[in-house]
Image (cartoon, rainbow, N blue to C red; front, side):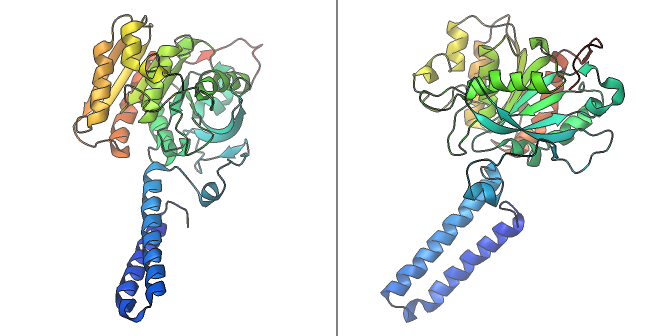
Length: 350
């Protein structure tokens, strides 16, 4: 059984109930040491069950192996994560991406649209979206909870999106360390990895466009803050970003106090020139923190920066909310990215 399966959680709940009933039944028959050990067993089982449920929601550990060994196993670069490889469906691949600029070396999921494998389009280079996950979380959350591959297949097939390569990088080498996609003082250089190393790897290994007009960002929760912040800081690489339930600041200590200045989005918009990029910002009306943070960002926007907002009435800070916003955000983002382009015959095929 997988770590986040319904059967795993059900068995954990049954164990808690069994231990609790057993403790009550045998209480008068047990000595002090027996009572203490039985009580401890109940507490440990209850804590473990709560942790399993939390992991189901966040996917901090997508497997038992990940829980035992926090160091990601180097994946097979040809590993297909989608069992269905029908001609009209894209493929999810896993690659190991080493970052010379950041010093980070982490696996990355990559969605390649069906058109990528069309023999008639082998000289076509595609636009790119980098999809950023929340914290706790992993790129697999996009796949398993938000069905990003399904959304992309449907939107591309319907013509609401152009065929697009989607990169799903990790934002931290340590599942318990929140980087908020920033270069932490004395810590991982997540911003450098995402904005320099990942694009450089994609340009060297995939058929993607290299101009900033073809590159965008999307993120949910902490990844939504990442998307907004990075598009403002790196307008030479990205032209647009979509944020699903994002906050206005990182919510962590960066180490240089920039969480209150250059990495605080309203501060940046008030004090620094606003770049010529576009933002799509969505939130649930019944989710206070994301609503307030998003509204602060929207209020500070001035030309040439543009912003479009979307609000769902209910759902809170949850996967259900992000699933509602996902397709509209992807459609909006695709409409602002340059289209696939055919290069000359001398282009190096990848």
